[in-house]
Image 1 (cartoon, helix red, strand yellow):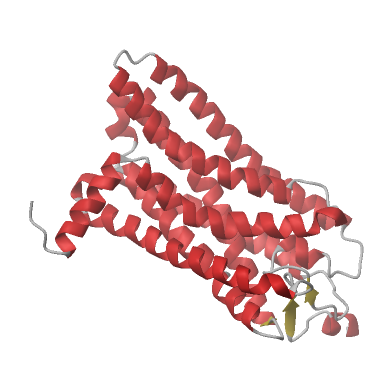
Image 2: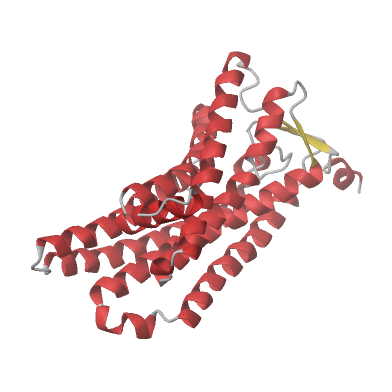
Length: 313
C-alpha cells in the first residue's frame, strides 16, 4: 500500500535538456515559431476546406481531420514545453502529465489510422475512379473518420493505463520534454520487460500494419498511374499522392524509429529529438506539404485571401 502511495507523485520534473542551459533560448525560439506556423497553417487548411465548395470532397474531409488532429497534437504539449523552458523548476502536475500522455498518445494513434484511410481514399480515386462516388460516399467517410478517432483513443486508454500502473517508488524526474511512454517507463522501480513487450506488440499493430497497407495501396496506385496515357494526368495523380506519401514517410519513419527500436542509453538525446520531430516539426510541415504541392489548395487559399481582403478579380 505504501508502495502504491509513493508511486504517485504530486508533480513530475521534465528535465529536457536542462543539463545544457545554453540550448534553452534557441529551443524556445524554435518551439514558438514552429507552434505559431502549425496553428496558422492547419487553421488555414481547415478554413479553406470548409469554406471553399470545390474542396468539399472526401480527400479534403480527411485532410481537415488531419489538420484538426495536428492542432490538438501540438497544443497538448508545446505550451507546457514553452513554460518549462522559461522556468527554473520545469514541473508538470501529475494530472497534467496523465492528460498529456493520454492525449498525445491518442492523437498519435489516430493519425496512424487516418493516414491509412487517406491512402485508401487515393487508391479508390485512382484505381477505381468509376466507383469512387459509390464507395467514398459521405456516410462512409464519416464512419472511417470516426473509426480512426475511436481506435486511437481506445488504444490510448489501454497503453496509458499499463504505463501509469507501474510503481515508480517516488521517482518523478522524467528525462524528456513531455510525458511519453518510454520516458515514464524508465521511472519504474520494477522490471518492465513484460509491459515493454506488450507495448511493443501494440506498437507493431498500430504502426507496421497501417504502413504495410499504405505501401500495398501505393503499389497499386503506381501501377495504375503508369498506365495513364496523358502526361498531364500522370503528373496530377503523382502530385496528389506525392503529398500524402511525404507525410506518411515523415510521420511513420520517426514514430517507428522511436517506438520499435531496442532501448539504448546512448540514444537518449536522439530519442528526445525524434519525439520533437514527429510531435512538433511534422505537424508544422503537413500544411506546407499539402499547400505547396496542391494547386487546388493554393487556389482555394488565394480565393479565401481575396475574400478576406475584399479583392475582386
